[in-house]
Length: 141
Image 1 (cartoon, rainbow, N blue to C red):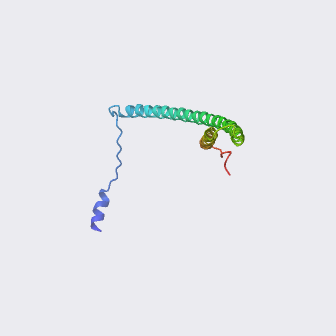
Image 2 (cartoon, rainbow, N blue to C red; image 1 turned 60 degrees about the horizontal axis):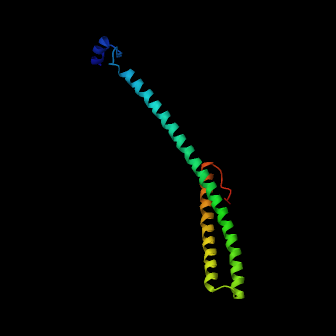
């Protein structure tokens, strides 16, 4: 208690603050750096938007091309089925050889294979396009 009585008469309270008058332009340089970084971020955002737009355009073009390919392969299948039917009739009547019939049959199988590939390529491209357009695929269940 004696100690507190001695200190009590000499107690003091002080607050100190430091205000730099000259900071060697560090604040100015930090502001400039922040503005440059903001500008870079905006340019980066614009580049990403352009890249996304380009990817969406490519997905759309790919989907349209895949659909056209599927439609053309479907027409080729119809034509090859008709040719196969005629070849079968000719072979059955003895007007053509087995070789000719097998050749037509192979062309039909190839057309069916290409149609199947085109179909699934189209389905994939359509799903990619649906993803970019934020909608469900027309083929979703």
